[in-house]
Length: 349
Image (cartoon, rainbow, N blue to C red; front, side, top):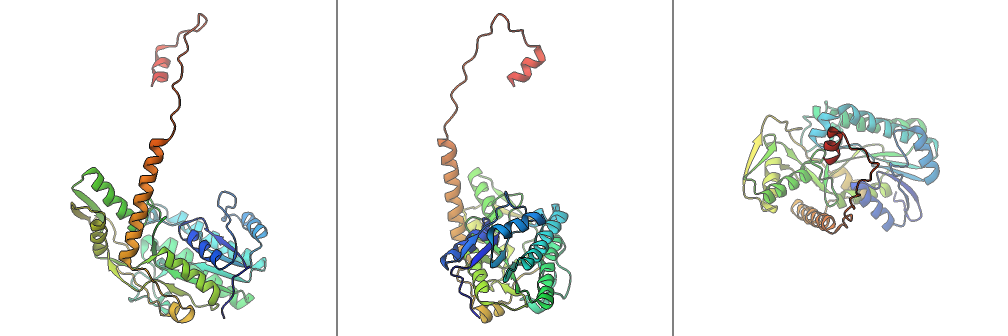
């Protein structure tokens, strides 16, 4: 059944984030009344803050996008935080949404929930046939528990909760922080920085043999909204584009797009992560008509163009920022005591 979202009150957690901004835009295009609980005012790890958000937004539908995420390095550094924050947010939010009378809950999980050695392409039926890849397991399992909760709540309470499993996302507005970014923005920044500095070598983690599937953020947002409108079943749904690319191929493609002509060195002391990743997206196509429209090459070009424009804008802003007027040096008065030599040196520094 297709639901008309026009006039529907929708609360989007993480609505100011990378995927969230695009989802909010699509919902507004459909005429929805959107409420975004910002983390500065609503800490969704706290039950009282969740209750307050539901009271303030009075949503009929909740789309849960908020997550604590990062690349392999961030996952290795923060396994406990990634498990706790993601689990506690989702579990309490779904329970409080049920108690508040929300009529639909859309949970956006992750491809990291799949077993490390799931058959390729990943089918939803294979979700429980093994343990996730170790570096992603705390995050992936925290999100996976929300699928269990959604199905249990449907069975006991008749609560309409659905679960989506998107692949790695990328696009304009992504996180380019080297400490926490995912592979595509990390590579774009690495290659551009190397080119600007004239470096003749770029070091990339792993062997390059692992494969991934990437979905452009605009396509992912459309999938979330289509599922919100049209999908009401307990079975999880893969969200992807159905194209597998090796990390080695991706690195060469991004390096070429960035105009980098130096040497690429593979640091095999660092992990590859999950060996292969690609989704079977049949269910999404058949159940709510989603098919990705943006090719990897086109999406990468748009992402690179956005990042270059953002860097130029940031540089221009920095150079045009007003500088403070020079401070006038006050002549010491007769009553001023001399500073001890050590204090004078520290103050001068």
